[in-house]
Image (cartoon, rainbow, N blue to C red; front, top):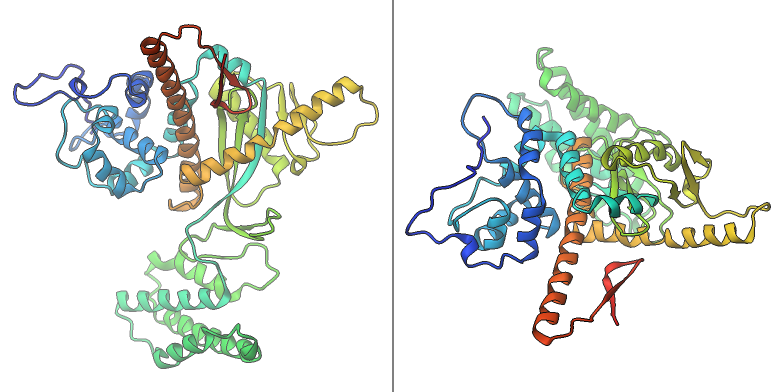
Length: 451
């Protein structure tokens, strides 16, 4: 059952109200006023039951999720920081300073499962609507689109590591079901692990295939022994045994390979990076306005689709979130084959023989501006938890991408508010009323000149 925060709380005599000792002009206080919490609660309320114990208020859960992504913290650390920060408590709807955790950090998992991709899409839409309608309408005319790899929290997959994990899974299932394996090969496996530890050394290259082959044969024997003794009624392990079978039977040139047993949907993606030839995760796409620097679209895709095939769905998401259709989509050569999608013209670096000098210059300017999306992706990864995704499954990929984009927009809005506040303070105390900040288009508020 959904628990709501009362609109007018009864004030207590012996407690200090938060707003009485914090700065109401702080960017988090301004952001709390700007977000439409009532509408957000109304949209997410159908995902809750009408009976049962009252839940944690939606504003508390959503607020802490946003703080976690904005400041790049974990589930446990964001709750601990919330306990000592009055601004964070005010942002999540508290009236008095709290001395206890608002909920157990594991409740984040249940909330993400409850609202899913649809709820996160609603939170992302709220971050886009922070910016005024006229600014958004002008900014969406030209957008920059690019894809990146959101790496999953898995170890680098090798055949030897997958065989060892398969052995662990088989023995764990046997121990849980009370199955006595014919032979566990514990001593042989321990010896093989030690010998394989330095098998890549040039002196041991000849021994490596033999040792790995022996480990593989032991894994197959234990798997077959477990499969023979498992009762047909034990359906809880059907998916796990199927994944283990795929690990033991996949070949080098197979397309749908398993790179992680606990995350079987992970794919191997090559982006042509010199320092990182292969990345294991999912492909995510970001839409970034050329003027204004607002993220108006973010999607995570299953498998490894061609970049050009993701363009249509990405533009549809932009239209759904902003109610505007981009006139120009600036992309790189990875989207080749796409020229026009509805009223949207796809702009990419290419040589056109029949093109006027003016059109060529405009196209070159747009293509040069596309490089700005690379810095955006770097911020999303390093500052807003897209560098390594810790959420489970394809649903976790989509949720993490949307939350990272929402956090970026809110952080950008807060930076603007902070700059306007400092300009006001400077004008008020130092008496310089003719200071005019001129914002450079490429980087918004970060670079500023005064005249």
